[in-house]
Image (cartoon, rainbow, N blue to C red; front, top):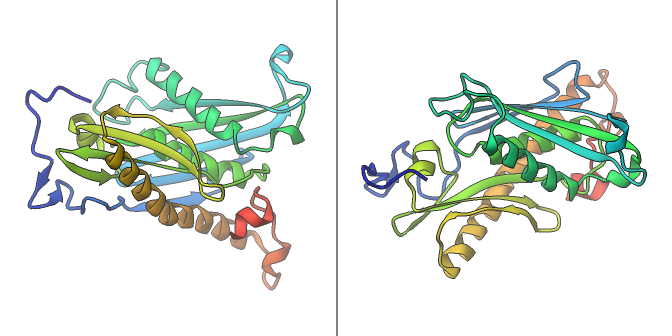
Length: 263
């Protein structure tokens, strides 16, 4: 978060600067299968964020000494295009922040991808931020989850991520860039909705115990909207590939077990 010396007023008349209520998501639009040469892909518009995620694999692990004979190895690269925003994050290629986000994103998917089904292989996940306006790690995880499902890679669940935070004494959901920079707390989380497991929780700032519980509940509630957008993107993609007259059950699976895809 930025220094509070010249902190702007982030709430006016009970609303945020972009007109949203305290607990309101930015508009989300998701499309699956947008990159022809990838095994799976997704494009996400989340407020002013623009994100592309692509998945390649499973394939033979290279170099071979990185392979695991018992399971697939997940490799993840998060990066911001040099033109993605006004900050310095994307201007000098891979940096400490991008490396950290790549690591935590990989760890999220190691918990849900059925890696034991593909021993000796690797699965490559690429997340490119084309335009940034806060919350890009959450947006990247949400898009990459759809890309993995689009690749037909078996997963226990379709993961989503979003942030909550605090402005003054108010809890807010889905912080944009100016809120991220000047809020009193920013807390991105990734959740497996089927199990309720928290796969990522990071915090920049401080929350009381009651504020933390409230924030988590708001994230879980918002997850219903995000998960619906993910599932709808996959349904539209596979529906568009079915020959006219064929039933939905004859289409390609979405990479999750049956209970996860319907529950």
